[in-house]
Amino acid sequence: MNTDTKNTRVIRAPTGNELNAKSWQTEAPLRLLMNNLDPDVAERPEDLVVYGGIGRAARNWECFDEIVSQLKELEADETLLVQSGKPVGVLKTHSKAPRVLIANGNLVPRWATWEKFNELDKLGLTMYGQMTAGSWLYIGSQGIVQGTFETFSEIGRRHFDGDPAGRLVVTGGLGGMGGAQPLAATMAGFNAIVVECQPSKIDFRIRSGYLDAKATSLDEALTMIADANAKGEPLSVGLLGNVIDVLEEMQIQGIVPDVLTDQTSAHDPVYGYLPRNWTLTQWQTNQVADPALVSVEAKKSMAEHVKLMLDFQDKGSVVMEYGNNLRAMAEEAGAANAFGFPGFVEAYVRPLFCKGKGPFRWVALSGDPEDIYKTDAKVRELMPDDTFLHRWLDKAREHIKFQGLPSRICWVGLGDRDRLGRAFNEMVRTGELSAPVVIGRDHMDSGSVASPNRETEGMKDGSDAISDWPILNALLNSANGATWVSFHHGGGMGMGYSQHSGIALLADGSDDADEMIARTLWNDPASGVIRHADAGYEGAIECAAEHRLNLPMQNC
Ligand code: NAD
Image (cartoon, rainbow, N blue to C red; front, top):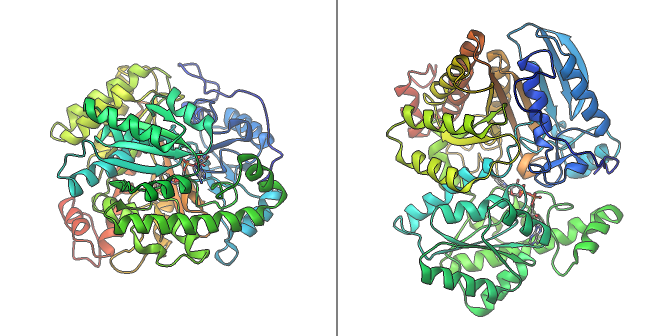
């Protein structure tokens, strides 16, 4: 990683109605970029790292400053080009074109390895954008809470008759995304033990209200869980340690978790996964002094980790990879049958993707939480029959503290996203909301990603590795006139493993925004339905027919 980035400034997004840029169209990306680096949002803002190992918002502080000053000056008919976190050009386009186009971490496939990326990163030529870090739509752990809540709820329904009370989820990692696990698990009714090797991460999650308690030994954690069971309340415990040590201890004690997964940053073997028997200092020092050694040792540990997960699966645990590429890394270190348990998308999320359902989100540029509560009420009004969504909104209101600009995420699909988006724009127009909102989504969505070990694992027609789909999605969204559009490589799975695109739309109450929102929030999820219908999924073919999508070779 390029370490020449440290800075002690505290960045927070401006709030309220006063513009710092020439229009809301450029104020919006400016605020969202800054919001990504808010100390309440970002994992390591001093290094520009937002989440997910080394996922950054800008290449270095000089580039950050220049993006900010370009956004402040950008005209309503210009487009800023950002190449891996560096502003490289401003061109005259037109008022309905995207204001910012972003490409992060892309490498020609033959060169798409961590080694090549790290070499280029050291030279200051590229940047790891993760998914929403480099596209400025990360909203803190809430963004992932609902996805994880959806997954755990589906596990509860499928494996525990819809009643997970007293059941135990065991997992690793309390970072930017992993920090959502304890809250999502307890919201879905499970207990959770989340093993984390850095005390500061455990404390941070307790402060943000995502984690209930902490422990320094497995016995202490299990006693806490037993007490909680006696009271009939789900509990989450952050357990300090190396996840492999804890799993081995559980194995020795004969404790079989009901659900077992992991969200260490295994996708990045140098910066994301503490090798077994290493101290934190040894890990951090060697990341700079001998990254090759860290990578080899981390992968060896991951092989042990996966073996333990497979053993627990044999003993009856529901085991899945949670999108961190742990199985592939373990396989590289020689683990047998590393893909012997499924990824969470293939197992639980694909049916949603077939309907264009995914992590739709929006952010109140006012900074006023009331704006989000008003949009929550609008979602209930427009989707009166979706009781699961209402439950999520209740739980989110009760448990989720906003990080940075207030925001909300709801998994909704084709036919609902555009309705909600237009309604939010109307609320801005009438003054019901006190300032414009930005609407977007994760890159991990129905039509926006190719990732053979995660979102597109085990596709029905074998098209897992075809990345034409996210490229078409990005091109389509640019044609739709989304306010900013991004295309990234790497993301949650690491170099060479995924390509994906992102969007953000400004709802400023204007007629132009109405048109753009209606077009984009229909076409974007529709592209996901098309992708899955093309792969032969019945659910997607039905959804396409129901919504009268024109799929030339599907007879729809
Ligand atoms: P992060 O780097 O912020 O956090 C990882 C955490 O794991 C760190 O706090 C680190 O201290 C801890 N850790 C590392 N090795 C450990 C070990 N051996 N034992 C215990 N703790 C250890 O990353 P993040 O943003 O939380 O994401 C985690 C991973 O999950 C990434 O690979 C991400 O891509 C993946 N993920 C994917 C999805 C998805 O598919 N949508 C969702 C969430 C997370």
